[in-house]
Structures are given as C-alpha cells and as structure tokens.
Amino acid sequence: MHLNKSTAAVHSGTHKDPETRGILTPVYTGTSYEYIDTDKSVYPRYFNTPNQDAVVKKLCALEHGEDGLVLSSGMAAVVAALLALLKKGDHAVFQGGIYGGTHHMVTAEFKGLGIDYTFTPGNAPAYFEAAIRPETKVIYIETPSNPLLELTDISAIVALAKKHGIITVIDNTFASPVNQNPIDLGIDVVLHSGTKYLGGHSDIICGAVIASREIMAAIRSRSVNLGGTLNAQTCALLERSLRTLVIRVERQNQNALTLAHYLEKNPAISKVNYPGLESHSDHTLALQQMSGFGGMLSFELKDLDIVSFQKNLHLIHPAMSLGGIESIICSPRMTSHAKISPEMRTAMGISDQLLRLSVGIEDVNDLIQDIQQAIEKTHQSSTIGSLAGS
Ligand code: PLP
Image (cartoon, rainbow, N blue to C red; front, side, top):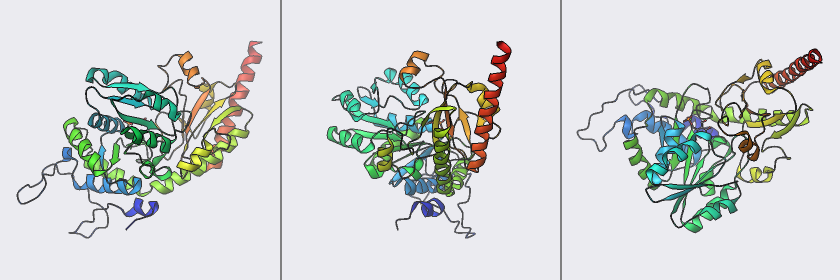
C-alpha cells in the first residue's frame, strides 16, 4: 500500500516485537547473531540488523526508493556511494557549489585514486553538458545549494545524464524528503547527511543513501569494505526522529517563508536568498521540483557588524550545522567558506555580510522579535561607537 508521507513517517518500517507485541521497534544492541539454519549472516557492518532494516525501510518510503543504507555520517554516505560508482580512469562532474566537505574530499582524495573530476562554474545544465567526457560515469548535484539557496534543474540534469548513460547522484540534505523527492524526477542515487533534518534535534550524526536495488547492491558491497556502519542506538534515535520529520519540516517551511518576507521588507537587510520568495531567481523552478521551500535561508546585513549582530541575538544561536528544531545562524565567511580567498568568495556571490539561517520550529513571532532587537542593539552600539570616535 502506498502511504502518504506523514503516514509513512510514522508507520513505515516499524519492526513490531512479536514476543511482547510492543508497537515500536525494540533496540537490538547485539552484534552476534546465530547463523545455522538461517539464510543470511546478520552483523552490524553488513548493514542488516533489525534496527538498520527498520530505519532504512522508513527512509525508502519517504524518498520513494527501493533500497538504502544508513551510515555513520553524511560524509560516510557520500564516500561510500561515490567509491562504489567510480573506479580508476573514470571521470565525474560535480556541481561547483556543493557542501565544502564533499568538495574538499573530492579534491583531496580523487586524484590519488586515479579518478578525474570537473566542478561546474554554475548550476545551469549547459555547464554540466560541457563537462561531460566519454569516461564520465557520475553527475553529482546538490539543490538547494549552500549558502545562496540556488537551485539546479533536476529534470534537465536527469535528461542530460540519461542521454549519455551517466548515473545521477543528489545530496538532498537541504530539502529533506518532505520538500523534494529526486527519485520521482529520475535521479538514481539520493544522499543525506542525517545529522541535519532527518535527525532534526542536533544530537546524532549519521548519513543515508537511497537508490534502486541494483545500484544499492554495489554501494552495499563497497560500504561493507569501507566500514562506516551505524550503531543500533543511533538507528533507533534516527527512526524516532523520522516519525516527526514531516511536521517538523512543514513548520520549518512556514517559519522560513514568514521570516524571508519579514527580512525582505527590513531596511537593515540588503538581500534575502530563499526559493519561496517571488524575487528569488529560481522561484519558478522551486515551484516545479519542490513541494515546500525548506527551512534554510540566507541574507545580507546592510552595514551592521555581523559579529555583534550574532552576539546580540538571544534565541537564535550562532552555531554550525543546520536542520535542528532550534534556529541557528552562521556566517559563511567565518565558517564554511573561511578557507576560500575573499576574491573567490566575491566571485561565488558570497558577501562578507552574508548570514545563513537554519530556521527552527519556534514561534516565528519570537524569532522575528529576536532579529529585530539584535538589529536595533547592533545599530545603537555602532552609532554610539562612531559618535565616540568622532
Ligand atoms: N551534505 C551537506 C549538504 C551537509 O551540509 C553536510 C554537513 O554539513 C554533509 C553533507 C556532511 O554530513 P556529516 O557532517 O553528517 O558528515
């Protein structure tokens, strides 16, 4: 039976305990399973324990995929998928503006493995087409992108890849399965940093891969060798978190849209990047390929000091990561893009005044009030500071 997402989030995959008839998946912490008269060898690193099976089934129901794996981090998922799909002599095309950790992994590891790669200079499908070679095996995208929330046209990339017989991989972390189901649009492999929206409470680290049974067989056998499995307790926490994924993300979508409209009208803000705004260059594409606009947005403070502004916030924490139920803010210049030269950052459209906000599930009026008081306080202290200096 095909379940809608809210129902799938609650019910899919649950491994009811036949002995006690408990309605939730028990936590099977064991690492040793009997093997005589069974048709499979169960072992946590083989990704086939009851807790791994249960949470993977739920993720597959949410992402509309056939099979999947949960791994020890988002990066473990990225590496396992790419190393299963690429071998020495192959070439991969990566969207230029992907997560910094993935970008760094590719540049640090691929040459040594004999795998060549090209990063596109932008998200337009023409850039991907121009980078394709006879030995290209994978096209890798991430949409919406970090931190400018730019979109990549998933259907156009899929059409291009199919024409050339190339496998498509997407990092769907920012959108979450609630807002975007890339498999429905023809994408072959979906990746997640489960540390973000899937976990949703800023207290677990994990990753996930979802794809067809055939592709997952290759990723599974590579992953068994790489060893990045997920333990039973974290699987159980992830399963519990996924039960509320839809209501959490729907609230984050609503809060982010309200905040984006508020920020857009605020004279202290020069620019707001949110795909739900009509002013966003990819708004029409967002309406086509996303069912919600997500909980991530970024904005540029006009002339206030970004460090003082962040310190003046009471509710919104200046902190790294994203996707939790609490709102957090960070400066790409000071965090994810700190190692990139100022000239390069400017070329990428990442201003020093840019702040990225991961919107939580709080009452949005309290978030607006927090931002408003921080703007006023930062403005006052900079005015006093300049008067004192004059
Ligand atoms: N993909 C995206 C979009 C991310 O933001 C991150 C982490 O920030 C990762 C992948 C890597 O995930 P993890 O930190 O769980 O390894």
